[in-house]
Length: 578
Image (cartoon, rainbow, N blue to C red; front, side, top):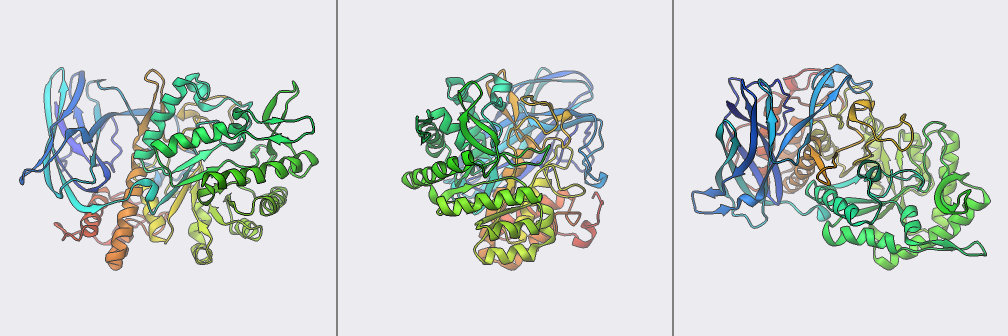
């Protein structure tokens, strides 16, 4: 049996073999109140079973101890890809398809491993806020049917504490699909029901939502996407004989309060006023109305400015603003209107709805994902208070977006099935550090948030309605999910990409801490990782770990224990894999 360790920056494939420079002991450098991971790898010439993994407590030479309860593990699993993500440059890929690509992290406590295949065990350590800074030693024991195997590791806990997610500098807009496919009709089948068969607000549904919420919080995803219209329908909203709406916010409140009490958020994101039909590029309004059987549904059948739509807006928007104000949520509510407008008709639609927002709910912030500076300008002219530009126009027009920030406009770049080419983003067939480095770029460019369109959509445009899809059937591999279903356990499986998002968010907090102490060093470190999020970024995972370790020590006012070497210029060659 061969046993060795690897950093969390590495995508470990089943054909991985230990190299002459690979280690059998791993060293973590970690701040307080953060999580960091590493991988234990096992490979044998014979089939074998891993029965479990146990951990010792972490102890320092001074007698300090951190309980092994702060350690966890999961087995890296694989998704088969028959081809790579659409229109992605080969230089950006971690490997060419077909083949099995690592991403899900299993909840199972044991696993069977085939001969001459490598199994990665994903190990994560949480450093408590009250941990005493010191160098700790510990070991993991992998219990197999071929014997027990130990992997040693150290944790250098530094005297710096990052804030909780709800108080962090970094802001996520990651649209979750708890209630339905985001901003869609109530007649569509929600991803959770499609996969698990659970109706909303049942005991089993809440148990699953709790598991997803825990993973969100531990991954520092600090927004909550709220499907307002469907929650109002679920609460018992009705229309009286004179045609007036009587809004019932009970389910809306129940959903939000669950997270506010257990997994606190920084912002709330209101579902779009319209749904986007990507086939004919229209933006019909989402409103509660009777269907053909005279049952109330959330439907997207009405043109945005007809009599019924205007009536809905006149009653819905003031009621929403009033309720948010009453609940003390107005300042953290971010309202979407229409996604990715770019046709003349969509822009006219958007302008009309912005005008209604300003007229009927002037205290609510609103803004949307856009794919050009031109549409950003249109939105600002219509009163938008935040902008969400696609990473490509954002990177190519940084000075414009920086100027808007100075004017008080919040700016959050986003990715969604692109940009195409050699851009940092979140596909399974890219290096899993890609999304972590994108967050470093957001920091170095002077911004403080990011939008990703899907947390667990489990489907994609092009399939028939109400159909979940395996990763391989999606054009942009994994972009529709950071979580994978675990139906038998009534849970979800995390992913190595979700861990990378967590790590990027933690790195961002440390960069902000160091920025206040030593902005020159902070700039130097960030530019070693990434200078632009297309082509101009390092692919050297050894350098990434060294820079990250230096960041933690510097943020804690601790001298570096190792000099970071290597010329930046040799690491920023397009397509170069170091």
